[in-house]
Amino acid sequence: MSAPYLQLIDLQVRFGGLRAVDGLNLSLNFGELRCLLGPNGAGKSTTLDLICGKTRATGGKILLDGQDITHMKEYQRARAGVGRKFQTPTVFKELSVSENLEIARSQNPGVWAALKTFRTRRQGKIKEILDLVNLNDQFHTLAGNLSHGQTQWLEIAMLLVQDSKLILFDEPAAGMTIQETRRTAEIFNALKGSHTMIVVEHDMGFVREIAETVTVMDMGRLLSEGTIQEVESDPAVRRAYLGE
Ligand code: ADP
Ligand code: MG
Image (cartoon, rainbow, N blue to C red; front, side, top):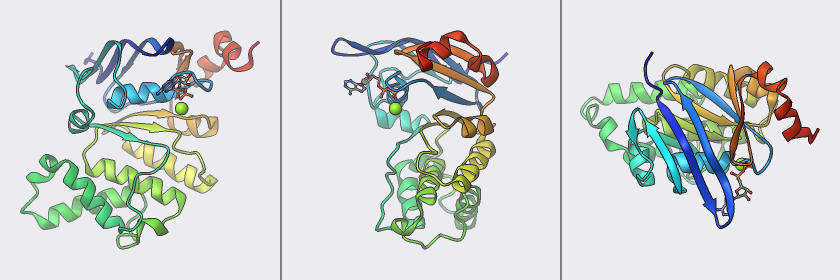
């Protein structure tokens, strides 16, 4: 069996006296999509912050493809392939879709260096990404004129252009229409196998469409892990959510 692509080992962070993440262990294989569930304040967003480097761990380890990234800076992790999609999109509204992608590309020049002199191959790669996120006919549209769903997809395209291999999503379906949610599930399913993803999500309908295995956190710790059915019938999960 190959080693996991991402490993969190006894990961911890304290904010003053609060142990927001308190000895978390988590393993993902390359190409896997894992949903991260748990009640409000469980430590899900903080876990994503720790992986991308926005917040530094006060204990434990993060291994990415066997490399210890625990103490790397955020931009170094981005170059190592970690991409974080925040709840609020960070696209440039006054620029077009293509200009936004151009900016994303300039963030990780190494990836595209080999294609520098091959304009058609470069354009082919961009087109492939835009097809995947359903924005192929929006190349010249100002990002500020995109719908909420399209804006989220542009941000995914920007991460793909930057060659992120591990993509962290915090409640991606929030605020989306039913159609947008469905399309987003299709995008995630298409990315499986070539990208490793952690998706924090509350919408269980959406979770069912994208994930086979889920991890449930509570109070900074791992509460339960397994198939959706296994986790839903776990008494510990019922207690955490319903206070049973
Ligand atoms: P979730 O995403 O699961 O709802 P969070 O990871 O956002 O939970 O928060 C976990 C706990 O850590 C909460 O009690 C929250 O108030 C606290 N917390 C998160 N970020 C900070 C911070 N920067 N400073 C202090 N406390 C924080
Ligand atoms: Mg959160």
